[in-house]
Image 1: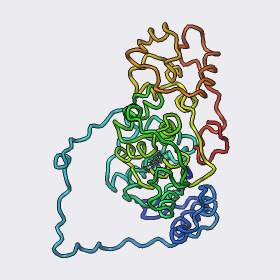
Image 2: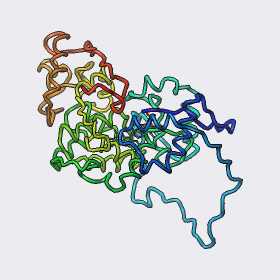
Image 3: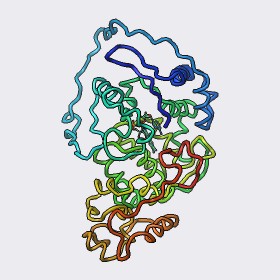
Image 4: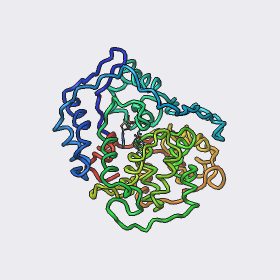
Amino acid sequence: MFFLAASYDPFNNSFNFPRKRHRKVLETILQVHCYCNFLLPDIYTQFRKVVEGQGRVRPVLSTPEQVKALPLGLDEGTIPTFEGLGQTEPVEDFRSAFPCRGGETEALARLKHYFWDTNAVATYKENRNGMIGVDYSTKFSPWLALGLTCQIKLTRVNYFKFVGLKYGNRVFHMNGLQDKHVSWKTDMTLFNAWKEGRTRVPFVDANMRELALTGFMSNRGRQNVASFLTKDLGLDWRLGAEWFEYLLVDHDVCSNYGNWLYSAGIGNDPRENRKFNMIKQGLDYDNNGDYVRQWVPELQGIKGGDIHTPWTLSNSALSRAQVSLNETYPSPVITAPEWSRHINNKSSGPPAKGRKGSSYTPRQHKDRGTDFYFSKNKSF
Ligand SMILES: Cc1cc2nc3c(=O)[nH]c(=O)nc-3n(C[C@H](O)[C@H](O)[C@H](O)COP(=O)(O)OP(=O)(O)OC[C@H]3O[C@@H](n4cnc5c(N)ncnc54)[C@H](O)[C@@H]3O)c2cc1C
């Protein structure tokens, strides 16, 4: 994701444009709206280059002194309660990477925290592929999606809005923006296993459970579970998109459907059709298995990166970890041939009789830390 640190400082009532380049980008994003509808490049990097290259920042509009009153006779109504909507108060999960609260005040507090209090923004590039904790990425998405803060401008989120403008309802079509026919399956048993975090592929299950329990999932997780649903399970991508739509606290129609189309290989960029390797991704981004251990307690007893492939462990290793493949955590609903490369790699290093401990440290592939939109390496 390309991130622009152009932001409003609520405490000094001023805008910060730390770098000239960012200022230019911000302006172009604001202006590109009027012409991109018909000129929008289908390849994101081309869009980004145009945006970065042709920027001019318009003056900031002044804050209105007062907001217009509601038209006479219009009933303001009351804000519905959970109870009124037939729901119960949501329970906060202590493991949540993002115990988010709504409203502009909270949005500004998060902005202050991320930019000024912690300067977490300085390490965004290194940390953005994280999966545990509140500060590995900005977590601005829920407020951006609802328009509660508009001071941060980001090329990626805007790009998907323009894609939506350009393609209209086609973003919801089964054959996607390329009108490409794929024989998508609609096997509900597989789909239910995916949505409930029961695929028995620990990296996928951990992410799906986090989503169900907190309404949030990291970008790394979203890319992986979307690839798993569409490329490994071969399920209709719209099932996944709808499940995300139902649960995400940051749901945004254009970002969600745009990303799903992209993951399914039927988006607007004809060059992109990538499949993620769940085992490699798990080992690269959750090397020691801490993220999986957090969300899949059945596997807690398995130490280190071995947690990503319980079905490959010896009986004695499994019994030490108190895992039974017949009962606690059965074998995966599917295995992909490319996984074995990493499983075999693993088994060559650690001791025999079950690979215990966190002894396995994967070599970092050169695209680690770069999300797939920008990566040139097609081997994932
Ligand atoms: C299958 C799939 C579905 C997604 N659905 C949504 C969605 O419904 N709503 C949503 O806001 N994001 C969606 N994303 C994009 C991304 O995962 C989230 O924006 C991000 O995880 C939110 O966390 P953050 O604010 O900490 O992100 P950061 O990494 O801090 O990024 C800052 C902001 O940039 C924007 N952004 C970053 N990456 C993307 C991206 N790939 N696409 C669009 N915007 C991006 C978001 O507004 C985000 O808040 C989806 C990604 C995938 C792969």
